[in-house]
Length: 256
Image 1 (cartoon, rainbow, N blue to C red):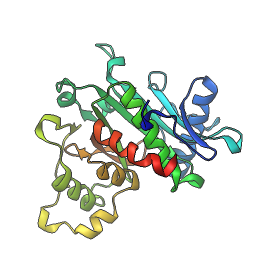
Image 2 (image 1 turned 90 degrees about the horizontal axis):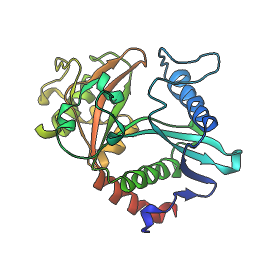
Image 3 (image 1 turned 90 degrees about the vertical axis):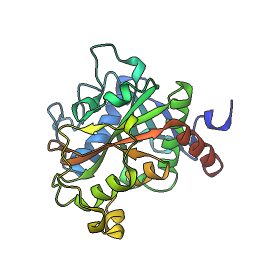
Image 4 (image 1 turned 120 degrees about the horizontal axis):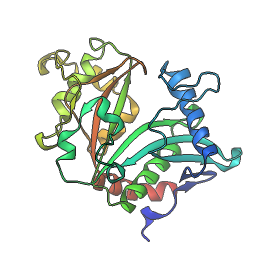
């Protein structure tokens, strides 16, 4: 096996897929702390008494976990992963509720949906996200994934407030026509003309996870979905799996 196929590990941190109801519950607990308590999100299946962020899609997704063995095998990072070949003819991706995915479905390429990416605040920065990238790349390589996609979020639901970064993404990173996912409904009223985009302010307003995707060569779909339940505005990120794999290879020396 090549370097990228080794189980990612750095010190007491390592990644693996959840294999039990207890591990899934631990990831939902982390998601509650990040998406509900930190970011103000909610949803019809969120359990506020048990402090679990959960939904109807959890049973069909795989759950990539970042584990700290020095802290009681604590789950300190999570990613939801859904290979397209797992869906039946009447099944749907989570993103189907936010975006028209017809271009991806018609591309004939092997798809992987990403979602619910989060890291415990105490572990942000350093090796944590690098290990998550490596674990994600290993997963995609093993399943011969060609295109990764998913909703990536800006905090807040006011398109006017987010017009600068959303316009900057639209003018600089819009997906090519054959991958042109569109938000439901698609409105571009918030997109400013290029000459009205403050490049520095717009780049500064891009969330760290979206910045990371862009560094990997990701593009974005047209428009944005306002998710009032989660208190976010979502753009669809589309990423070539080969770029992720090459990036993961470059990380081995830093985390191996």
